[in-house]
Structure formats: C-alpha cells, structure tokens
Image (cartoon, rainbow, N blue to C red; front, side, top):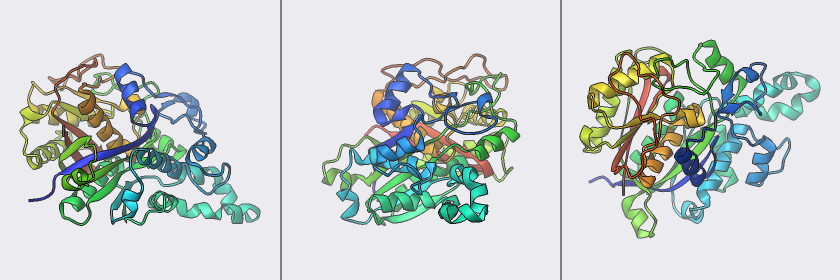
Length: 403
C-alpha cells in the first residue's frame, strides 16, 4: 500500500506578510494585502491595485543575508529564497542534507522583472558585460537552482510551469515521488514576482480590475495580480513519525486534468474543473459530503468564476459546502497561487475557520450557490478542497485533511 503523505513544514511570503502566522492573522481579520502600487515600475502602475510584497529587492536581500545592490539575484529568486528561509526556521536543514529528497519548484515568468528593467543595458556595448549575467534568469528553473545552491542542498530537482496551476502540480509531483518510494521527503511550492510583462499582458486581455477584485460576484470586473512564494515540506507518514515531527495536515488526495478547450479560457460548462475535483475526491476515498470547505480558484474573471461555479454546483449540488476565493487577500500570484492557497487551506483546517470571500455583494445569475462572506469559527473542518486552474486548460485539485 502506498505511503500516506503528510505536511510537516511551511514557509511563505506574500502581500499579507512573511511567515505562517502573518497569513493567519490577516485571514482571520479580513485584512487584504491588495493595495496601491509602491514598488513595480510601470506607466500603468498608478491605475491598479496589486498584491505586492512591501519589501524592496535590497530589503529582501538583507532579510536573506545577501549583499544589497546588484547581487545577481532577481526578485523571483529573492522571494523564493525568503520563503525557503521561513520554512527552514521550523525544519532542521540537516534533514534535507543527510539523505536524498526532492525539490519541486514552480515558476512562470522567471526573472522577467529584472530583465525588463535592464534590457537596454544588455544591448548597449558599454553596459553589456555588467548585465549579461541576468540573461539566464529568464529561465523558469533559474530560481530553483538559486535556492538549492544558496542553502547548500543537492536534491532531485524539477521546475514546473503550468501557468496558474504550477505550484499545485509541484505538490502533486512531490507526493507522487513519495508514494512511489523514490524519496521520503519533498519540498514543493513555487514563486512569482510581479512584472510589467504580466501586468500589461493581463491588462491587454481586459480582465484586470482596477479595484480589489470581487470573485463570484455578478458585477465582477476581473482579477488583481500579486506576487508570493511558498513551500511545504511533504513527508511519508512513517518518516515523519520516526523523527517525531509535528504533522500539520495530511495531503490526502489530488488530481490534474486538461480541458483541451482553449489557450486562455476554461470550458464554459466547467467540465474540466468538475472532472478534476471528482478525481481528487476519488483518490482521497471521500464523498462530496465529506468536504467541509472549498478554497476556490476564483479569479473574479468572467470565464473562470462561471465555469468553476457551475462545476461546484454540478458536483456538490445546491447545498454546496462553504466555499470562497482568497485572491482578494493576495491578488492572483500566478505560479505561486497553488501553494499559497494550499497553505491557506491548511490554515482553515488548523484554525477551524471558513475564510471569507471578500467584497462579495450580488450572487451570479448563472448560479444557485454563493461564497461564504463572513469568517466562521469552530467550523468543524475535516477535509478541505483547494482548486487551481491555469491557462492552457491545466487544472489541479488538492485535498487536505486533519492529521
């Protein structure tokens, strides 16, 4: 029988702050990290609100212990290093050095935030030599190698880039490696930094709200972008118990599918999301009645919320368990969205709360169901479902359970 996979460590940095407790405090008080732009340089920046991490690259470098200034690290790498540092505050690094483990990272835009700043200097002969070192940072795997090298780790490494489901797929792959006996432990997650490329790109699709987004609302206008990085330490249950680790949650089920419908839109009837959730529940040996809370993908875009809402309604019926999107707290963090929302699902389990869907006012006409709008305490949660649906029809659903 395949090993049960459990989560024994968490590291995170988001617009809500650094560390697990910062996330808990914000989620419990309904404090959004989506605010006016202060760091990203763009002619469009004053028009939008973003889930920015309120630390400059120099401040992130200082936090990590790197020289400030032109140190060769992009913001993407710095965020990933900061999240790993947070994880290692609760996990002895020697645990990852004494035997093989897997490091599965996720990313979508690499070091774009740096390259778009210095692009003219890379082309100019007199500044080319100084800046040529950043060319390789456009590779999504660059931040993966940076983290491993900085902390002196030699893991099985992989980098996943499946758009907004990237870090959910990293958790899925790490769990599979543990279940197959390849490793006993895996550090899984991902990170993305804000860039003009992403802001301008999503704006060109006309699906970015200039105010804090309203997922699953009839009058939703689009998403807010954000940045974040996070990692979870996954272990086989036997390995975790053998070392006396505190088990935070069980990773009891997962599934990924592909809509094969459209490059940037989900199947309108939500069939992809429906199939993914159904398969994840089947793997976890659970029925729909066993799910106590759903952390929806909920981007506040027209297409996603209709498709996901219809899928939820089809699978769970009109008496769906409480669900909400947490993106009004952090913005849509792209490759980091899956790990951030997995951690928020674990917060819900550990704190026994239903996290509210901020800014919701009017139920969608296409749906009979509506998200939870108030924090619910003592919620009696046993199993939580977390969804991540990305461009290219890449769908992932994860199930977390009380240990």
